Image (cartoon, rainbow, N blue to C red; front, side):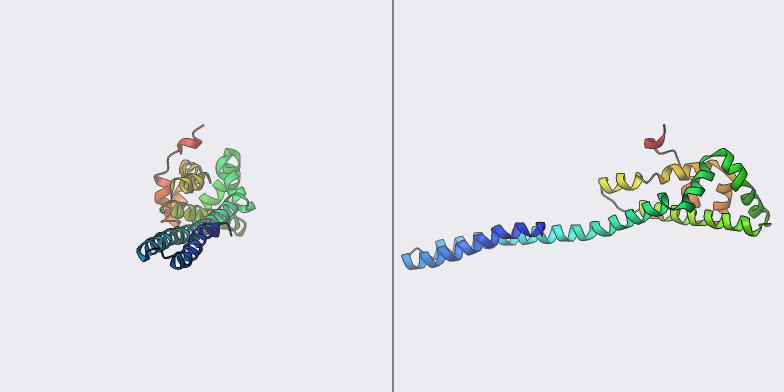
Length: 192
């Protein structure tokens, strides 16, 4: 409702001009003065309506972006499976104990059912990363870009790149994600 407050002023101006026009015609003021007043009111109304259309359109474009951000944030940071994969990637002990044997078995083509479940979790992590990379490559304004990059996916691309077996797995099975992994650099905001 807040957006519509801009319409009140031009509508009041139009109403005022109509009242003045009626009063002026009774008093005998020239038609050209009345026409000028009406034109000014119409111009003000048009400007306000145009501004309102712009604001509503802009909001219409912002809302889907915010929904996408919320969904991706939830998938990446609040999902237990994503948390496991992030732990495997970030912690040397977890990587060597939990994930490295699975990746080596997959690269050798001899994977067990329990290992496959872990690999499936890694695949879901890769799918989320791929979505983050793809949305991150779209046009965004400065605030959107900063917000999107606050998800921290650059860090995880860089960490994946450092894990050679995981990087090789992604190269073999996630061809659209691999270029982002291959070219990953530590994002300046995370370089502490």
